Length: 218
Image 1: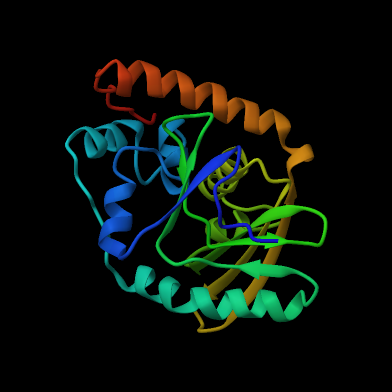
Image 2 (image 1 turned 90 degrees about the vertical axis):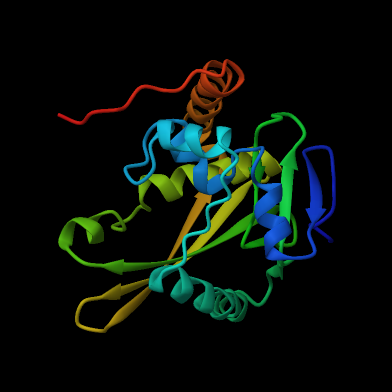
């Protein structure tokens, strides 16, 4: 079953280059930005996101962690494929999915997968673990910003499940591969919260053209 094609839930767009792909992300909120939209991303606030979108900034961060993650993505994808030989793992480079139901939502999956009966999402992550708190974020769960990201993907695609494979690197040079599975039916309340909060903030700040106030943590 071909998954990278337009359907009732989303419009599939294939770009010719990474530069075009970055440009296509400017007018919508992508999965990696979703946690900022609902105000729970400690690295990029709702105000930061608003300023980025309203000023038309296409910001691509280039550092060692990003380069490492990009290099490992195809390796981890192939590892997942080998570990799950009955799963159809599909990937399109420089692809973006535009939600048809929510005009401000987009998603760029690391892969779309078919288990023989249902369509799902494969998300691939790498993380450098510097302390015990960072490790706790991966204990029987995934960090909140990644959790919101994959649920955003479920909203855009209408798909039924997510598999996330992550490589965690430690200070001593060792690494651990972890895999997580999320069923849509088990996170319906979280999905509803993301939809409602995301819509409210989109309408209030982005459509209303109101710059969010600075968020202070006490």
